Amino acid sequence: MITASNIALSYGKRVIFKDVNIKFTPGNCYGLIGANGSGKSTFLKILAGQLEPDRGEITKGRGERIAVLSQDQFAFDEHTVFNTVIIGHKKLYKVMTEREALYSKTDFTEEDGIRSGELEAKFGEMNGYEAEAEAAVLLNGLGIPEEMRQKKMKELDGSDKVRVLLAQALFGNPDILLLDEPSNQLDLKTITWLEEFLSRFQNTVIIVSHDRHFLNQVCTHVADIDYGKIQVYAGNYDFWYQASQLHFHQKEAEGKKARAKAEELKEFIRRFSSNASKAKQATSRKKLLEKLTIENMPISSRKYPYIVFKPERPCGDIVLEINGLSKKIDGVSMFEDLTLTVNKGDKIAFVGDNSLIKTTLFQILAGELEPDKGSFRWGVTITNAYFPKENNEYFNNEELDLIGWLRQFAPPREDESFIRGFLGKMLFSGEEALKKTSVLSGGERVRCMLSRMMLSGANALILDEPTNHLDLETITSLNNALTAFPEVALFTS
Ligand SMILES: Nc1ncnc2c1ncn2[C@@H]1O[C@H](COP(=O)(O)OP(=O)(O)OP(=O)(O)O)[C@@H](O)[C@H]1O
Ligand SMILES: [Mg+2]
Image (cartoon, rainbow, N blue to C red; front, side):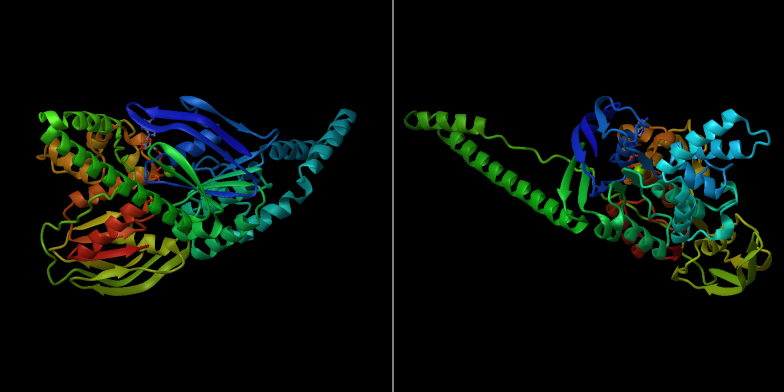
């Protein structure tokens, strides 16, 4: 069990939370939902004790262990895959390493003997003897083959790292499990495995996701962040959606009724205030009007950004010709002798299990990677813009604010209002445009990358998993923008 009491947190003028009170109980799986930038990751960090709120406190049951899906993909680079999983249970890992060091000693003293007895007892208490088997089951389920287990983390690609980190969080039956967007980098098969794992899991789970289907499968409750509050609903995502719509329409109808009533009273007062015979009635209606409180509808953080890709010129007849293209990554063939002609008006979805293949092809087409063999040619009328799946390297300079960041990609002649225009469309207006890129949430970074793409004026768009991290509203806007786009788009999703 974990409880949040009176939690409040603000950044400058922006209130993220005020007065959050929730008790999360074992046996339940809570889906933590909300718009990009509403504070989901922040709340998980507060629960995990990684971030201090301005006010309030977090309490959990005595001796309960929290496990967190680590967002830092590089933290375990020097560890083996297997050890990274065990590290999920810190105490166990400590005992395990001490025990191993002890047994590898050549001069085993009597003292060592006593110590080893203590360690064995602790090790057994924490199910240490089953640890290896448990780790293997988790890694198997998450699609990490046996030969990878002794590799160092730094040798793995992004999607494999995420799987290992997920195994780390799930390892050792934690009492409280916190997962921030776990399904993002996973293929469908692994997502199904995770759904089954979570439905068997007996303890407390709090999970952030934008994936409605996934939430419907695993959640017993939904915790919705909006209006600076967190509201818990019993039921899955679909249930939450219906309940919240109903609540919204009721509030709206109440507001409308109250406003109509106020108008009627005001009209009466206007007409009859100076009329001696009705003055009394007018006064009593004035009192009624004062009592009538019209609740302003609070403003939701769920908003649709305005995404529009405006090509500077239309595509000519020749768009893209790919001829006999081959590429190997770490000795593994991604594609061989790939030949493809892309025509005017084509919008092509690249599908398949292995995301690395698609990413490799896109990197070559965007000029970021050399093919081993073969060639490709963009038509002379074509300018392409590339949306990469991993955007870390675009945000290296943590000192830049959003205006400074987007300026890097704008023509030098353009002034600040031009840049602010693009940021505003992506919901960064006023002070929001002045925050540092280092504080951006996952979805906000994607919104920045999309504003960079809008600004490019390209007539061929290459998009690698653009909807990862995005909230439903932004996905809808992006869908509409791509449907309306009159030129060429190559994408994976
Ligand atoms: N130090 C800071 N100063 C100012 N703003 C901050 C700071 N840290 C975080 N923020 C802002 O707080 C908000 C909440 O961020 P958080 O990462 O919790 O969002 P989120 O709900 O997880 O979004 P996403 O769905 O995109 O992952 C964001 O708008 C972020 O830019
Ligand atoms: Mg987040």
